Length: 325
Image: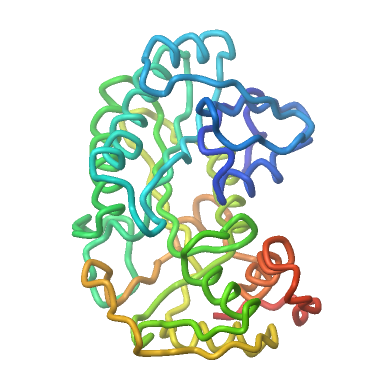
């Protein structure tokens, strides 16, 4: 049976695509307050009920300790990360943000009695198995972003039991939605459609698993309600669509359903050799233990992204809500 949300939740990464979606779900939750830790000079947060922000120096353990000691969180959600946009930051920057920061935050959170720490990893960290990936599968990758997340994943699962912290590792697979307005796949397609240009793509033979960022955020909420029973056994959950389709098919379905007028240049780009050919989640553990499964069709997520970041496209409301690949 699901428990209530913690009364005090601390969040990092509140201005990212996932953080924004999570704050929308957390805003106004009865009995819960959220403190968002943000860097100096970072993007402002939307004004939402029950949400406040505090500027900290993430490189300073003392600064983090002060923020945690004054707020006394019952749960920490670490969603801050860097490295998925092109061009990527230097490896040293990715290692500091994706590896050292979560470890630093975990060590300071250990001072908060009974805290539940949720860290957001990635499905990209898995070794390609040519099938749906399970939580016990091996982590091995040469993808720059995923390699740093895999390192953090392993280190956090080693450190948490030693520090006496209940840890949940979430591994979301490919997702999109409002806020995804950088250089990734669907904003690139929408940007090309809005400017009347062709978008250059790989051959699209990769098999992928795409879902809405709203569903990933709902998975975080489900994890907040179901902390591990003991620090000795960290919990790990895949968050994905669970359906295997070629990237070419996924793209064509979204373009057709949204009525986008854009020329798709399949095969004009080389696939990234560090990315797996088959990246699809086995989501049975999250369904069984968290009561979670994706609800929003991908076309709805891309449509909401278009209406918020590419309004010149003037897209109509998407088809009836029915989850598809």
